[in-house]
Each structure stands twice: as structure tokens, then as C-alpha cells.
Length: 196
Image (cartoon, rainbow, N blue to C red):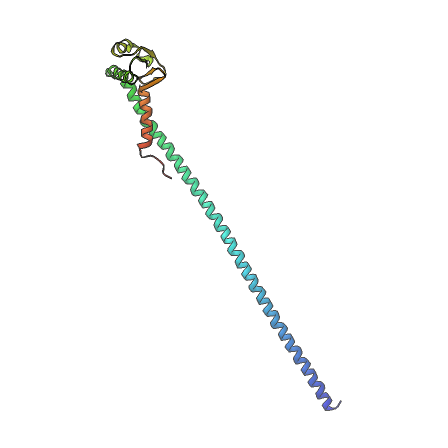
């Protein structure tokens, strides 16, 4: 082959090789860019998924902590309530013992007569007076001292004092009702209440 022909072929081969190399480099660049873009997309997706997972876990932890705090607060309130009940029962129990001792004291008959007078006055006299069975020995004395129609025994009166009835009306001046009122007073005024 003549030299010019060889040169032409050589130039042609060089041109094809150059073009093939350029295309290969372009494909390599495009492939690299595609891989980088896909990695960036995958990285962003992984970050987004991680963020959502972290948020979900954080919400779950907050909910668990909230439930635990609520449970602990409820337990504390329950314990305080039980302790308040114990204290209330101790105080009222001590008061009940003192009232029981008072109802056996020499001052009690005078107290019972004052209660009977208050009940009869509240019911405008001529009523049925109710006393506890233990006070039956005082029945005649009370009947003479008060303006009541009749005196009956009422086993529901345990501590002392008396009740009265007249024409569907009733009056209660028993130590039992006074103690019950003190229990309510204690609940309201002891300072052992629960605030929300």
C-alpha cells in the first residue's frame, strides 16, 4: 500500500480510536454521574427514612415516658389517698373513743337533756324523742324535763345524743351525726386534698 494510503488508513484508525475513546470517556462520565446521582438519591432516602424512624421512636419513647409518669402519679395519688384515709380514720377513731367515754361520764345526762331540748324546740315540742338503748335509765328524767310526747329507743344511735320526729319532720342532734359532720369537715379542711 502506498504511503499515502497507509497514512490515510492510519489517520482513519486514529480518528476512530479517538472517537471511541471520547465515547468511552463520555459513557464513563455519564455512568459515574448516574451512580453519584443514584447514591445521592439513596442517601437522601436513607436520611429521610432514618429521620422518620427516629421521629417514630422518639414519639414512642415520649408516649412510654408519659404513660409511666401518669402511672407513677396515679400510684402516688393512690398512696396519698390511702394515707389520708388512714389518718382520717385515726383521727375520727380517736374522737369516737372520746365520745364513747363522754357518754359514760357524769356530764353526759346533762348533755343529753340539752340535746333533747334542742330537738324538741326545733320540732316545736310535742314530738317523739329517740335515744339509744343504753340511755334508757335516763328516760324518765328526760321525759319530765322535756316537752315531748313520747321517748323511744333507737338502736341506730350508737354514741349518744338524740333524734326527734313530728308530723313527717325530723331533727338529729346525735353524737353520731356530729362525728359524721366532723369527718366531712376533716376531709374539706385537713389540707390533705388532691389538686389537679
